[in-house]
Structure formats: C-alpha cells, structure tokens
Image: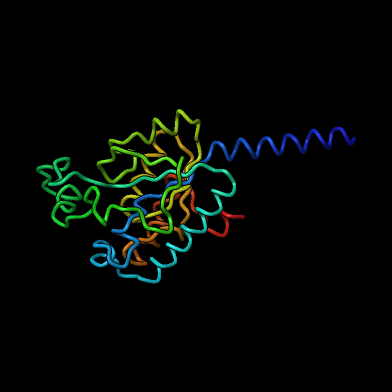
Length: 214
C-alpha cells in the first residue's frame, strides 16, 4: 500500500510538472502606451482608471506567480518603424488609427515595457506582430508549438480589442485559452463586462487572478 501511495504521488507530481511546462502566461501590450500614466492610449481612451490600476496590480501578481512556478512568460508587444511603413495606406481600423495617433513607435517611450513587468533574461518576446491578434505576422505560434505549449493564459490590453483578437485566433488554431479577467482592462466597464459575459465562452474560459495563483 505504501508503494502504491508513493507511485501515485509521483504521478501527480509528474502531471503537475507537465501541465506547467505546457502552459504559458501571455502579456499583451504591457507597454507604456497603456500602463504608464503618461501613455497616449491610457490618456486618450481609458475611461475607468480604477479598472486599469486593478489590472496592473493583477498582472504583477500573475507574473510573480508564474516566475516562481517556472511557467514560461511570453511578451506580445507592438512596435512600428518610423513612419509606420508596415501599416501604409491603411484606410480604416487600427491600420489607420495607430499612425494617426503616433502610438508604439519603435524605441520610443510608448513602446517600452512598463517598468514593473519588464521581461527578464530568457523570457520570450514575440516579434513581427503587425495586427490586433498576437499571432498576426508574428513568430508566436512557432515558438509555442516548438516548445510544446498548449495552454495560454492571457493578460493585458485592451480586453475587447487585442486580448479578444488573440483569444479568438489562439482558440481557432488549437490552443486551450484562458483569460485572467481582472488582469486585463477595456476602456470602460461596459466593454469589459460584455466581453466576459458574451464573448469568452465561445473561445475559452476566464478566471480571476486569485483563482490563477492558487
């Protein structure tokens, strides 16, 4: 009986290790444009300051937890060359809005990672992203598949734009997707609540930071 108990414990430990190795925390646009008080997007679009501050705190908690647990961290950022040639001739949507607003300039303040959640050496920063989804034009999918990651926990900004776009595409190409709901922020509470009540269940699940770090 003691040997069976020991074997069972080992199996449980192995399962937990495998689950961790197959999971990753995605930080979507955890950059100054959103998170810093002087960020252009935070100043221009954010209507619910309390929700933003709460999301920053919970991203920090989630990041601290996964680093302690040895779960991979992936940064999904935006940055564009001078003059936004990647988005040239955009007539509508983000392809028009981003150049007009002058956000996420490569090597500029807005594109820098927010100081409390900056990447550590060895943490992966996806590159090449050109659209709302973290997969759009980037090397994110190749990295995830090559490292056998199956479960994605999404945090960041904005909930109803780039987080949602990443969630939808991740689901469609085969990943198990989870949104850490209070570690994201939309522009206002109505947008946030609609996403959580009407959108997420089609493409994955959502949980709180408290549930995630248990």
